[in-house]
Amino acid sequence: MTRTSLFMQLLPVLLAATAAQAAGRIPHLRDLPERPDTLTISGYRPDSIPVRRPADSTTIRLRPFIRPPYLQVGDTVGIVSPAGRMPKRSDTAKVRERIESWGLHVKFGAHYADREQPYFAGTDAQRAADLQQMIDDPSVKAVIAYRGGYGSVRLLPLLRLEGLREHPKWIVGFSDITLLHLVLRRLGVESIHGAMPGSFVFDEEDPSAESLREALFGLRDTIATPPHPLNCPGTASGRLAGGNMVQLLAAMGTPEELEVDTPTVLFIEEVGEFVYRIDRMMQSLLRSGKLRNLRAVIVGHFSDMQGLERFGVTDPYEVLDPYLRPLGIPVVYGFPAGHAAPNRSLYMGREVTVEVDGQGACVRF
Image (cartoon, rainbow, N blue to C red; front, side, top):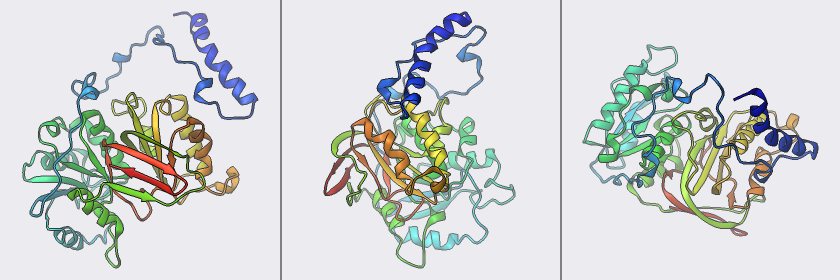
């Protein structure tokens, strides 16, 4: 393809963006023309990049979703550390006591408390082996990440997750574990976005841990929230996907990229980010077409945000609203999930219904 022909393909996109900028507004999806079906640059082939893709990646999304069995008293859960190492003063005895109080047995991974590495809980091979062993162990009915941080993505070339299709079990976590939820979405296996032992509270009531218990045992099918001034009314259904925004954007262009070709309800949350970066992430979601087929959006905690005054907002939700409101779909703000308390558990990959009106909102699993 010549430079001239490439430019002619891109010209409509550039003109649309320029017009939107001149009008002083964020370009809406309808402003952006569909991307060409093929855009080939001489000397480049997509398959020339050495990326390890999941087996049967072209058909994986066509598989019906599988729901792991809910836990029963007497079942065993495995605890691993696929990302950062745990703090020095972590009280794993209390973690065991809490989970055993639910009527469950606890099995810790061999390297869950490893501190030999400067950041990670063991080497990539060790962390991957711990996770794989729990997945392959038929006595383990759920695998819970002790904490997040960073590092799960480094394990993907070492894992064999296809067995979860035949012997499904719950994979639990949030934050960095968003990456594993994305993988399981591609695989067609439901998972739980919920509290991890590293965030359990022991000196007072812990609604986040209690919500995890309810999710593991299948004891709750509805989460209601009070009204929020930015809520967008309506009722819609779709398969729940998403998690931490940084993780969602980091997965763009990889085999784990968020797939929204089917009706999707998007959940997003974030912590400790400058709000201009939130705006940049929303630009990426908009311009990549990830917002195009959404049926509803659930906005969780956006906690400890920075740079609000400099960006001209008093609430981080004000950054999201100009992108989400024009979609004309139900949007729930202030949903109690994410890095702040309470962190209610969500069934990722589950077909959910979102209802929003003047009385508040409700998510039905």
